[in-house]
Length: 539
Image 1 (cartoon, rainbow, N blue to C red):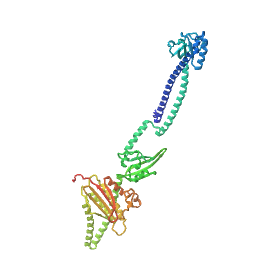
Image 2 (cartoon, one colour):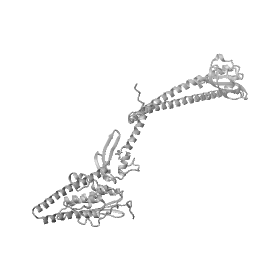
Image 3 (cartoon, helix red, strand yellow):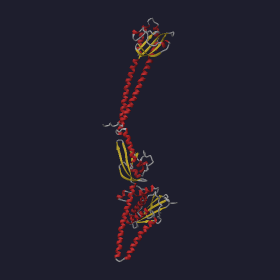
Image 4 (cartoon, rainbow, N blue to C red):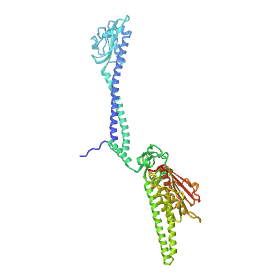
């Protein structure tokens, strides 16, 4: 047996609103009917009292009562008044209650059916009483002569049936108005709920609640960043991953414009762009993110969906891979050079020039060992020492001399654990790579050289790299750390992340990066990283 699908949220709201409208209109109609009946009865009492009082105070009535045949004079007068005022009956009687007038002439001379006691005491009163003409709302008042003596009584009344007919006519009109109100309210409710059904896609409350729960769980579970912007480029939705990648953790970002987030200008431009962006790499202060944007345009919805992926680790690994690739190329070149030198030594021996062979081989060994001894003596940190030796071999491959300054010194154990070797490789490796590119492009007869300073004190690690390249102009000095800036051409020019990653790594550890001109005419980059005392050391 197939179970019926629960009514949609819009359908439930429509049914509830129709019930509310009907109940409200019905309640108002019932109240109006009861109120109209009370008002009709009050109006009937007032009219009956006014009619009876006016007749009793008429001088002609008192004169007719004193005549030999009061009924002959009073009956035409009473019927005329009854017709003019619209009351059901006008009865004029003597103090004993014997009628002089009545709408039905054959009842003249009979006793009045009703109470007359208060009127005989001089009071005007009203009551609802069932007489010869049926239930009626009536008033009874005394008639006095010139001396103030009660000489008769006047009773005027309106039949309850007539009051009921009048109330029913008013109720019919009210029912028509109430029906119109219900129809109008139902039509308005239907229009509103049709729009609501379109927005909720016909889902019921349970489905909407379940979808919201899934939506929240998905937003918090997905590690990738998700940001939704409205047509004015304000954040309307952002998940935990995006807050972390954009450095917005702990801030209330919903409702803020993209320009108010304090992001780097290229990343802000990518988020504000109206055209789609595909797999763009942008560095922030602490991370490298891959940005994808997709404009959204559906009915009255305008905005942009932004996805963010963390590229920091991958970029660091890519940099390390580039360094390893460079080391491998340097080793291949050194192996090739070593083979050439070995062939030279063998050839000298075969020619009987043993003394020249020994002298040639010794000179090559002393040159290689001197550089190794200098680096190992100055830099006790193994990662930095290995990096410098590898970069020296790579520079030699390009015909560039890498020189370590005499004041370089990094004692073993001085670098704290919270300064990972990967970040040191990122900073120093990228600076040397940029210097190598600049020095290789240097023109003229000047020898290409890279000068490296690595010096650590108790409070600071200084990394300085200078080259003999063409240098960096004043206009470009402010752009070198921007993503995409590069002096390279071709495919490598599209990357331009090296210096951006250097500044990012320095900022991550509270350091600074400074660009100045080198003594040889090239560029000089100085990175200063604050150090906290490593565990086990003393001040």
